[in-house]
Structure formats: C-alpha cells, structure tokens
Picture (cartoon, one colour):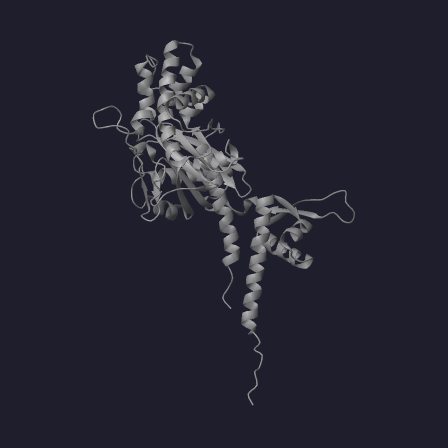
Length: 409
C-alpha cells in the first residue's frame, strides 16, 4: 500500500520565507516613518499589526542600517518613557534643478536645491548659465557639486537628481524633446549625467512639476483633478488626473504652444505666438508700455501694467486676458477639468487683476463653464515640484531596496 507522506519545506525555503517576511516588515515600518514623521514602538505596532518583539527587532535593524534614528522620548504617561523614532534624514539626499529659459536660449537660468530624506533644504543656488561656452552636462554636474560643498557633504551622498526642463522627456529614446535651450536636446545627455554623478537622474517637464507643487502646496491641494496652464517665456499645460499626471506616449502631453490657431500669414500661427512670452512683450509694446524699458520680461511688463492707472495699461490687460481666455477655453473644451490654474510668471504678475479679466473674457466668448484660479505658489514652482518629486523617488527607492534585497534561498 502506498502511503502519502507529508512534505516538510526545506530549511533553505524556510530561511528564504523568513528573510522575505523580515524585508516586508522593515519596508512597511520605514514607509510609516517616512509618511508620519515620528512614531513610537506602540504607534508602529498599531499601524503594522506586528508583535512587540518583532517591532523592536525591526526598529533595531533599521537603526543599525542608518535608516531610522531615535529623536526623543515621550513624557508624562504611566511607565517608562517610550522612544520616539523617525527616518534618518541623512540616509539619503536628492538635488532638484529647475532650468528656466530666457530670451537668450544660450543663457538659461538654473535654480537648484539639495534636500535630505526629511525634506529639509540644506543648500540652494540660482545661477545664470552661458551654454555657448560649456555643455549642460558639465553645468548641472557642477551645480550638484557646489550644492554638496555648501551643505558640507561629499558629492557621493547625493543619490538622485530631479531635473525640470521646458520640454518633454522621451524615456524610451532617452532624449529631451520640444526644448529650445541650447544643448539639452543632445542624445545621451541624461544617461551621461547619471554616469558622471553616479546617481539616478529623472527628467520631467517643468509645467508638470509646477502642477506637483500646486497639488501639494497651492490652490489645488484640497481638490481632485485639475489642469494647470503655464504662461511664461513658454506656454505649457499640465493635466493632473486625481494625483496622476498625463504625460502622453512620448512625454509630449501638454505641449499646447504648438497648437495652431490660424492660417499661415494670417496672424499668430500657434498658441505660443499668441500668448507666449515674446508675444506678451510685443503686445505691451503695441500699447506703448515698453518705451525706454530695457529688454523687459513678460512678467515685468504685466506687473507694470497692473500697477499702472493708465488707460493704455488697462487696454493691454484686456487684450492679454482675451488671448489667455482663448487658450483656457481650448483646454476646457477638450478636458473639462473642474479647475484650471493659471501659473507662470505672467499669471503670477497679473494675479487676480488679470484673472478677473480672463473670467470676463471667457463669459463673453464661450458657453463653457470654466472655473479658474491663480496659482498659490509664490516661489519657483518648478523647483518646488522637482524637490517634491525627487524626495518621493528617493523614499520609494529606499523602501523598494528593503523589499527586494532578499538573498535567494
């Protein structure tokens, strides 16, 4: 008679399962510390469902690995004071870089900041760049090195760089497209930067990063989906679908500056020529608002018009609002978002004065029901969005490393 004998898992398989479970417990605990900031052992037991001994063991391993630290003790309760844990801010650092185009495409302006795992900014720099004399790779690498020096860190401590550009990144081809800034469209730029810095590098459209900042820090913080239209030197659109950005098949979603608005030879060819930065400055000149001004930026001419009581300034703002309304109506007609945020230097400079005129122009020209708001970000929105996105990447990388660093049985 044949007997069925119960099979006992091998010691190797048991060990492998134990290591996997340990890795899952560590990653879950670190994720809670990153999300919540500070927690006691009791807090973590409640969040993870782990036993008291297992929680203590997990925290010991995370502390030994330099991923968690004790930041204080509870006071006032019965029994001994409990230790308060947090993710170790020095466990990882990221750098965010915002590339801002100017009227001279060989001379963009770079703003960058270095942040630790807790989100504290340790260094920030803003520098004009002359790309007629140097390469973007060297410029960005040099910026990262100077930030690290300013923060008192070895450059190797920076594990991630998040780059915001006025263009779109085609990850499949490894190329930044739709960008006019000199040198940034060169194939291999991103890969070369990662190799030189020995760090991960992510590239994101600047307007998408502004939308990330708007969701976390601005007028879209409490809402659902929204669209952000950027009015600056360039024109762009970010589409936030409940917290997820629509990037398109090749990263080009939102490049509305290329959308045609007229026939060849009959006025502006596309939305960029209608309401992009150079068009805004040209429009102001047509109303006599830039006489004697030295190479004013679009934000500067709009700010001056808002501050002026002249009838020509009001007429300029009305015409600008009509053009902005045409752009906003095109976005609303396709997406019908619950909110459209006006952002970029032109929107910031125009503030509610311009927004009210845009609302009036919308009501006069389209039956669409469109809710608009001016950006709530007063700092460099692209840089702030790159900091948020870069920090999220670093945190996810640490958590995933714990989950996947399980030796084979």
